[in-house]
Image 1 (cartoon, helix red, strand yellow):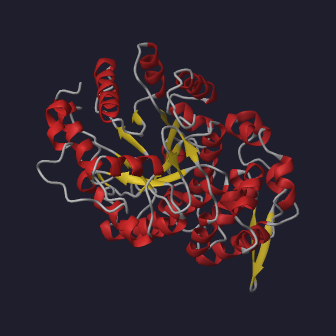
Image 2: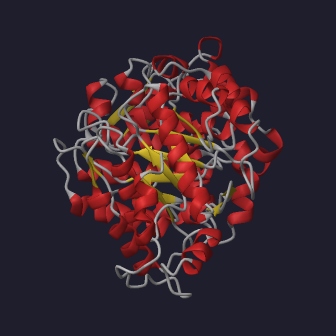
Length: 464
């Protein structure tokens, strides 16, 4: 179905909904690379005007990627909740933006309609929103999840402690873990990106993480971010696996390039669930996404990268994850060229995921060849904190020595919590106080050489 609108004496026509969404997207290098972006600012504004008048019901009638050709499309259509959609079914995309920003549209209302919103609807409305709109609406979306602690409560911010090491040396990883714990990080997850895919090496990492957790009785969850099929093998070999990790995308073809499909994810979920390791809840999947992955894999089907990204959240939502995050600037400047594009993408991703009911964090990051710097990351991190981000990354010095990219540090989390008065997961916060790492107020204590955690260094060095 074609769409059109006039701006002055110029009439702009868009062949279908897929084209309209792409042309309405804020400028970003990935869409230019794919040949999908608006040619001029005027064409982009014309597309936004036309998109604002599209009824939400239209997204249930016109699939961007054919139902028969893509299992993610089938998941979105078959799983759509018409009853949840009913209160907003009469709205256009522009009306939805206005409704989201009403004071009367509160957290309970947004939670109730979330199953009725498709990723394409979320992506569409985000294209009409300024940055402040994305922050305000996302702030009202509450998604709370639980495994060994409670994540996503209002006024809280969690941190993934990321103690990567270029040779998977357990002593180096343990030292980074201790560093992060002493800064109050790790309540989201202690998650290692391994350098190796050798199962014996990975087993040592799982065992070390679990031994440290048990030794100090830490209410946390751990994860080794290797391929989901390797994690299934590890469970069969007796690994003490907490969270099941996988990178995901918004099209079947892109997921196939990752070596996964929905059936494999269901098998992985069931395998992890069978271990019964959660204590306060059973949300146990951990997903990572990022704008540009579908284009990079040649699996975008002519859909703009932000809409493809939103479709990945339908995959995440299906498995009720504990954590999901967009690794926003990791793929590189071919997809998000500079700090401005990275900031916008981070706010879009967080808003769309939360609107769909997905617990969303962000790896606030960039690669060294992007036109971005740490000041840009400070800006995005602060904006996401104001928007109610679920979690960010905690990496020693903000510099990942294994993956070679720039992210956020333990100190960044302290800054964000201080400026915005954000708390850690309550169970983890109580542990920090009990271990004399923080005061009852949540403030860090001065840690001297005699602190009992530091006395445990011999244990940590031989933990695996």
